[in-house]
Structures are given as structure tokens and as C-alpha cells.
Image 1: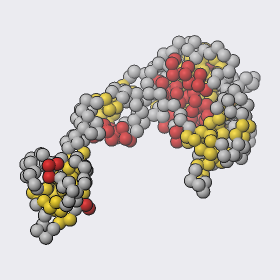
Image 2: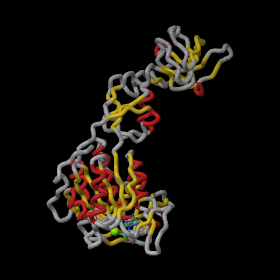
Image 3: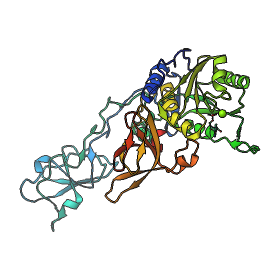
Image 4: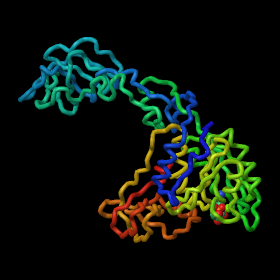
Length: 418
Ligand code: AMP
Ligand code: MG
């Protein structure tokens, strides 16, 4: 399990910027070193544990990039058309052992190995056959055209995949192209998830008139699974310090991260803070971020704990900036900064300097082809519809105080946050 010192999340300043938070996490969280081996088909989303050097060049042999006719460079027509008799036919998967005869051309297909001495391929669309059945080649083709040399994609021995890479389908494809069957990956990060609050009922259970169904736990568990975590659903803890403390203590030794939602504000019914302090150490990170209230960071018996706010939108946004980097750091993943893409604002917005704000927005294409962001009309941090009916978040940096229609703003798609 992750073992962290009690003071690892301590922070001196009164307000922490989002960048400071991410910086603290990435420097202080120790990566898990346990590995497991998975079949390629199960590697999606996992973190690669070792560098992979190309065991063979890609492509493995020099081959034709098109269906056409292979020739020696010495036989390339320079100023006028030239008719060459046919000599040979090479299909994809076929062997090309015999050199092409000088002054001849060989029929060749996409992916077929180039015959020895042949260096250039004419596309079949660019040639015609004359009455004698010879292939008439046009002048002007560059030597080496339409040929894919061995190793042009990746030379043998090149470090093609790095330890810490979160594997996407294209990385799996590369491993398959190397002929690999299984990959060494970091074992899944084990996360225990709790909701807190007397007002919560689990879906499927009776709901009292003053209760609402717990949505955050399912949102967070889903987000964690998308990050490749092994998630333990620990249900809802009541707003009572001892119950909370017992619940958290039980999972400390067996998980890499404990995640809670709710109960971290400073109200007298916010008991997560006191519960963690009674069994471990805790700091409240007052992050300069909206939406998002204080986020609790703690250590219980060496296991990190993150307490997210209860409001669903605040929980969602702080997940992206605190939980996501923590999970990636635990998994030893290469840093994956969130990079907003520039879009045009279709709204007016005022904000305070000194804090980062995230505005829920939908994208639409304007008549001139640009992407335009439409702000969700309401701002409450409890509005789940605001996350469901939009495409992502507009990131407004600390120094911004105003957004005017037409201004360029950074957009983070929900798909990029996970
Ligand atoms: P808290 O952070 O506990 O003060 O909660 C802030 C608001 O978020 C309250 O209105 C809670 O009812 C709501 N809330 C807390 N936890 C959840 C949850 N798991 N699912 C949905 N809403 C929640
Ligand atoms: Mg609460």
C-alpha cells in the first residue's frame, strides 16, 4: 500500500492555487511499485511499468505503399514516358527473392516486400499498358516514391513506449505490432469510496422525505474506474464522528487511497475533519478554485485520504484537480496536464481575480466555422443538470476578471478530465 508521512500534505499558505495543489501532490505522493502482467486486450487504461524498446523495426521489411509497379531507380524515365516489360508479380505476404531484371518492372501490391534492387513504385493509377503489354511509366516520379523503408516508422531498439504511459488503443496497437502478447503494468490503485451525510439514501434503498439519493459516490466511483482504479464501494457514513472514524480506519491498511465526499466544510455537522484528526492527521486545503470549497487532505496510518466537498459540481471539479493527479501519481503515470483548447466565448462573465474558475459550457460551431462556448444559464454547485447538459468546463485563470463575448477562452472537454 501507499505509505506517506503524516505531514506530506501540509501547506503553509492560506489559499492554495490549483497549480500549487497539483505540484504538491505530484512531488509528495509515492508511486506504487507492484506490477502485474496483462494480456494486450486488457491493457487499455493501465499504466505501463517498463520501457519497451522496439524488438524489431517497423515496418519489419521494406514494402510498397501502393498497388502499382516496382522499378529500379536506374530505369526511372526522366523527361519522356518509358515503356517497360513486366517481370514478376509480388503480393502482400508473398516473397520477393529474385531481383528485378534491369529495364523491367514488377507488378506489386500494397504491403508486398520490394524485390531486391527495386527502389521506386509507380501507382497503378499513373501508368497505362501499351499494345505490347508493356507498362508505360510517366516521367517525373521521385526516386524512392511510394516505398516504405524498413524501420521508417520505428527503428529497432528505439524506446517506443515509456514506463508511466497510460495505455490507449494506439499504444496497445504498437505493442501488438512488436509481436508482444502481454505487458507489465502497475497494479490497479485500490481506492475506498465513502459518501457522508445523514441526508443521503443509497439508490435502491428507501428514501425518507428529507433525504436525497447519493449521486456523488456513483459519479466518483465511475470516474475512478475510468482512471483504471480498483474501487471499493463503502456506502454512506452517517454524520457522526466515531462512526466516520471507525469506517475510515477499517480501510486504511488495505487501500492506496481513501476518498470521501461531503462533510468537509467548517459547519458543526461536518465531521470528516474531526474524524480524520482523531485517527490520523489532516490539513484542509483551501483551494483558490470555484466551484469547490475546502478539500481535506489527510493521512491515516500511512494511507492518503482526500475529502471532497458534497456539492456535486464542486466534487466533480475538485476530483479533476486533486484526485486525478493523486491517482496518476500513485500509479507512477507520466504527468498528464489538462490542456484547455481555445474556443470563442459566447457569454459575458465577471469573476474575482486570484482564483481559478470553471464555467460549465456547451460547444457549438459558428457560421464561420469557429467553436463557440455557451455558458450554462445557472451557476449552483448542486445542479447536476449543469454537468449533464454541457460538454465541458471553461477554465478562467487566476488573473482573469471578465469575459466578453468573442474573447478566446480555454475549454476542457469532460472527456479529457477522465
Ligand atoms: P456537505 O459538503 O456535506 O456540506 O454537502 C453540501 C451539499 O451537497 C448538501 O446539499 C448535500 O446534501 C449535498 N451532498 C453531499 N453529499 C452528496 C452526495 N453524495 N450526493 C449528492 N449530494 C450530496
Ligand atoms: Mg454533509
